[in-house]
Every structure is written in structure tokens, then in C-alpha cells.
Image 1 (tube, rainbow, N blue to C red):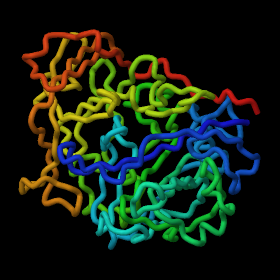
Image 2 (cartoon, one colour):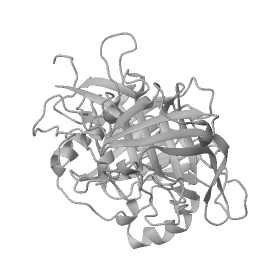
Image 3 (cartoon, helix red, strand yellow):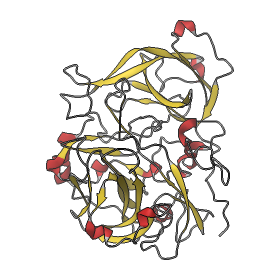
Image 4 (cartoon, rainbow, N blue to C red):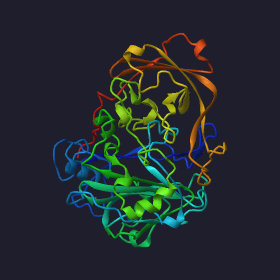
Length: 453
């Protein structure tokens, strides 16, 4: 059976759009087609984000299923057992090495909608690779490892690893941007797997709580927890996400699963001071402008996908994405994020929005939002650049005007948008032919391979 796998690259964003601190840029997403063996043990094959070619229950699971076990089978490549969550008795890195922990919900370049993982940063955030150990949170097993080659990017980091860990068929964690794997893990992987075209292996590697699994440095450690018995309610159309990142709607707050001992040790490093401290990625409000949107005809999160021709694949999948969401540190602030503005993905702060996106409804009619670059500043007024834990809580500060956005909710799930750069609200009177219509991904479909098996 052929599976379609999306292995998303990651981009880190710190501080502010104005400072353009886009660190560790890792490009866009890409797709892999692979055949999956009946034996999941260290096979180069589909992985945690495997897309089923046929629907219905199977050993490999269904990434679009509402059944927790079926979903978990899809996330594990069919290699999981049992059900239920467990207490996580270790942080993903040593407490003494932590500088700060960023919450879910960042917006950065091609990450147009709130990012579905947090970031652990070491004491030397931008130092050398392999400075810090990555630890197993609890007993479990590694079910998938992916690799990205960075050797041609002129950076200290020559490659990084994404690792998915199963604790049961309904409970998972993952980390990404590790800069090396521990030798005990490497010994259990196929020879030269990182040189293969897809650079992804399904695995069956048992791990113990506190075990060193990898190292990272020179960049953050991405981290998230998934619980398939729970579904984010404010991502309104699950298929619009399951067709590309099926873990997203089951992403949960790690603090709900860490033991009290771990929580007491890591809480001082959390940057967000507003509950939930782990952040919020689901902000859709039905009948309002707030949350995530997708350009009509772009198939939700997956974007426009094509097979077999030059340029085929999922390049620039984010171009159809749009978000009007709360700032992750100061939720009273609002961010406008768009996947294609003159060919680029861009984010702006919204200056004193009235009404705010969570209040903007059909009856609001045509609304003008003034947008500008924004910064996150410390309580002492300094712009925070991510080099160390900030002084006090972080505040959102929107700078000089950079343009105006026209926003109108036409129907409960249909939004009209147009951006006018370098124009004030008084200089904009109405939509032009360049306006674009967005929906919640209501017509999104699962991506299926057209490759015969």
C-alpha cells in the first residue's frame, strides 16, 4: 500500500517581526511517497504523518479517523499498542541546561497559522550543535525518525532529526531539530538511511525514562505532546488539517501530563505568563473572523498538490493560509498573518483593531485594520531578541503603520480579504479585483497517492 507523507520543516521566530529575528530558517514543507512494509521495525517508509490511501480501519490506521486508536495507528505507522496517557517524569532536556521555553502558537514566515509545537532553548541559544542532551520523557518506543540534510546551508548545524515516540496508541510526544542521535539509537537504524531519498525510517526502538536519545544545539529543540483521545475544538474542520498534519488537532498542553515534580522545575522557564502557559493554536470562532482560514480551492492546510509534473508536489503549501489570531505572549494583542502577499508569507500586528477579530461578524460589514511591524518588549522597554530569559513578562508593541487590511465576513465561514501596503485606512475605500475569498477548509479532502501499488 502506498502512503503519502508530509514531513514539515520548521522555522523559529523570536522577538518581533520588526527585528526580523528569523532564526534557523529551514525552508518549506515537502512530501514523500513511500511503500510501507508489513513489518514496522526500522523500515524506510511512511511515518507519524502517513496519509492513508484507502479509508476504514486497518493495521496502519486512518489519519482522518475520529477513533483515537485508528488515529494513533496512523501517527505511529501502525506500530503502537495499548491505550491511555501516562505521567511524564522527565523534561525533554536537563533542567540545568534550560534558558527559556516558548509556548505553542508562534507565527513565522511560512508558519502562517499558529505553530503546533513549543521550543526549548539551551543556556547558549545560538551556540554550537550537540551542546545539550535530549531526554526520554517516560518509558516508550521510538516509532519514526526523519532527517534533514543542512550541509549545503553554510551553517554550524549540518543536519537535524525529528523523532516520534509512542507510549500507547493514543499518546505520543515528538521532538525536532536534534543535531545528532545518541549512538545507542543509531546502532538500531539501517545503514546509510540518511542518504536515502526520503530520509525517513519507521522504527521499533524501546526507550527508558531519562535515557539520552539525542543532542541539540545552535538552535531550539521543538517539542509537543499528542493525545488522540482529545481533539482541539477550535480548529473547525479536522480534515483541513488531517490531510497534511494529522497530529495537529490532537496536540495537547504538556503541562497537563508532566509530573508535579517536573512542572515545578520547568515553570520558571516559561515565557508565557497567561493561562494556558503552553499556548493556544486553535482560535477559530464560527461566525467570527478570528482563527485560521484557507484560500478557496486550496484544500485546507495541505495546499494545492499535484503529481508527476515539473513543479509537482506541495511547494509553498502555506500560500493559501491566513490567520487573525491573538499574540502568543499578550493575548490582548492581535496578529494578521497571510501566506501570499506579493509572493511572500508575512505577519503584521494589528493596531487597535475595532472590532477585534473575535467580535467581527457578518453584521460588522466592511472593517479596516491598520497593520504594522510588531515587537516583543521586556518590562524595561528593551526589545527582546531571544538571547536570554527576558526581564519580566513580554508585551506586544506594534510599530509604524505599514498598510491597511480590508476584512469582511460574507458568510459564517467565508471571509473576504485585501491588503493595501503603504496606505492608511483613510486612503482605502473598498475592495478591488485583487481581493481574495477564504474559508475554513470546509471542502478539504485527504490527499491520496495516484501511484499504483
